[in-house]
Amino acid sequence: MEKELSFKYTQLEHWNELPTSDHVLVEAAQNVMQGAYAPYSKFRVGASLLLEDGTIVTGSNQENIAYPSGLCAERVALFFAGANHPEKTVDTLCIVAKGDLVDVETLLSPCGGCRQVMVETEKRQNQPFRVILVSQNNVTIIAESAASLLPLAFGI
Ligand code: THU
Image (tube, rainbow, N blue to C red; front, side, top):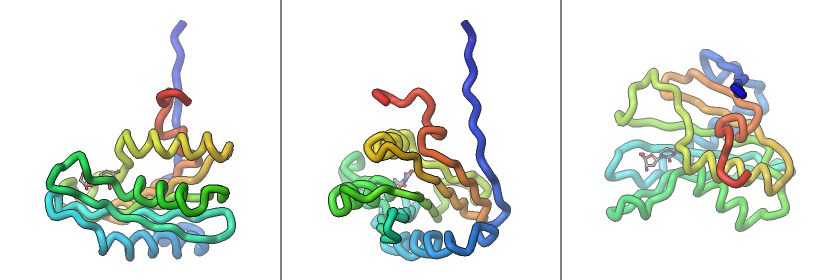
């Protein structure tokens, strides 16, 4: 039997076309991105999370000379939220990035490891969350769930 999975998302030319209530999330991700520790890749990533009660949690990528010991911005933010706000539902995850590692036009998209953590967050809270991806040229993608970004995720 042949099966097919499809993926629906919204694309905007600039993040400022997002609802005004989302602008604070983009700005929080842009701000925390400044504090990224990325001496090896020189690629800075910022992630912000809106929790159910309006709390905003942020994280940036943190690299290490032993490369695999570093961690992506999304997981820094998600694990901080899991550790400090375990009872609060994640409503939205927003990601921004800057650096020469990828072309300015390349759509920003979280790595596979972060997607796996994102889908488990949805499973844990029994509720999907929105994912806003702001590329370096400001083109913005909105996905309605993390699961849509990782079909057939492990163990989910
Ligand atoms: N990085 C993230 O923070 N998030 C992603 O989704 C992909 C990559 C970081 C890891 C590393 O510090 C740098 O970007 C280059 O890969």
